[in-house]
Image 1 (cartoon, rainbow, N blue to C red):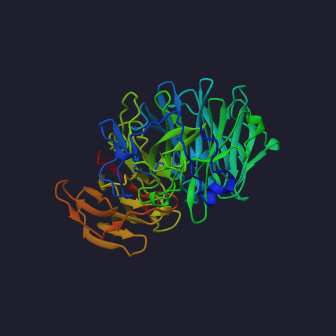
Image 2: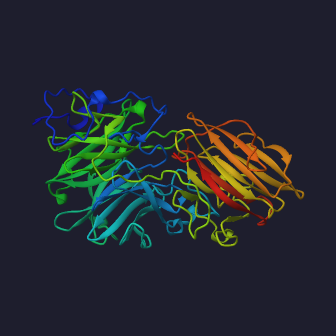
Image 3: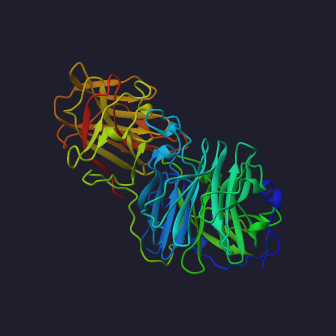
Length: 543
């Protein structure tokens, strides 16, 4: 077995260790020689290859801050959702590669008023990273918001019902929490005070996950932008897995371990698990999880965002001297990114990364989320059967789509794709505009505006003046956005659903506010709370 690794600060800043042997408990990898060379963002295929392998990313969309657990034969994962509502997306899989969206869990009104439709002041904030856990027949979710604090909720099943949020620690400046119940049944909670030199604390937690002993906080880490905390137990060791960032190197994954949670985590038991892989957008935050017996994986996001967001990757884990090394193990005993990997020998799972919505159910599919908590009485799935009615009201800021409530949005896949909506615009009022949009921090839209009793096609980006086109006299209009593999989007409209006219300039999908681009349907009125549109469908490209 290996007797020494890079330890302390030396591994982070120099990374000069040379090892002569690698002893492996397990290696869930295809041979490194079978791996592929892939340029970031230029993939022509991804996910399950249906040949016994998969190619990363497995989730080429904005599934950030992943955590993952296994309960029985099923895996569950959560992802952060920032200002989107409902918050915290929950996913399910049986093979770790193909995932289905189950639900979105958190009503944002429980967090604070800034996340509501009438304030909309939490871009780049809101629901940050969290952890999903299972204990004594119950599912638990813990997460933080950088302005309001740490929260928890639990449920008897993934579908719910999920309890109202409990605030574990109130106040700004905290992020990236996790929890664990030890072998004695004692509960523990960890979180980082990023506002104070990224100090990470460990607290005893109540068995029901609803309170922490604040006065018993134990400092276990500090500095180097340390965050992305995850607590796991493997064999006789408890691990605190986290990431840190060194200037000039980037962000990578580190672990500390202890045999007794009461002792905390010391730097004497600390190892680096992977290299920064800066040019590959730094895989660094996720859950370490067992696949088939003895084979382990790291389900993670890539921390540097792109127009698709922070994408999800599944990397093999090789256990070396009791440490979970991530990806291809190099001569220095530290892992690097791997693209093609042998698929876990597990029952096949279905995937539904994309979905179209016909609005013929009592609820909207979990693939869709509102931008901020919606104004509940200004949308309806029942006013017109099989349609979503969006009622127009004044935005927080006139003319600003990013400050207009009740925009229903969808994660864009970082690949070529399209989204299309069909609107009935016969119920519009003067001052109203509705249509299809793309947004992260920047934005664009193609819509129909009503002015002086007439309706016109209109295109706009956040940094240009509106371009107004022909008058629309028909009752219905089809609007579409189509983008290529570089994220260059083109808008089209049709008056018959068959013949499409391009309109407006090309728009580059972008990263911003810690979010990848989303495509959505919007409706607001700058002049009055008046008018509505009916949405027949929101159709996405299926992969």
